[in-house]
Image (cartoon, rainbow, N blue to C red; front, side):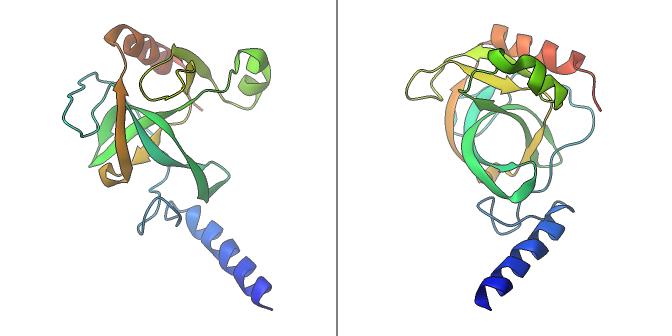
Length: 164
């Protein structure tokens, strides 16, 4: 009986998460939902401990299929919107081997190399088709800034990618 109650509670939170009010490690107010709209990427990193466009930071990123679940990962901040940070998630998984399959599912990746955000120095890829909205207080630490040249490559690929 308790198991059914927990399962029903999770199902209820999933319904709520569809409206952008998911609960989970994103905080009491939850994940505000992915950003939909036009983003003009800007590059303005400042080594002040606060997240700025052009910097890679760490944050809890919800799974697309369930905003109540997710994982800690590096995120490239590309802009701001009404008090939120806008970012693109990074991964150390190499998607070059499955480009066609990823594209078939609407996922597009770009190599950005390695940097201070990965303690093991592994090369990373940035996902171009999903823009995350993050509360500034949900960002837990500064990772590193991308070089302007790499940020410009990301910006170019991001802005030329056809949107759904």
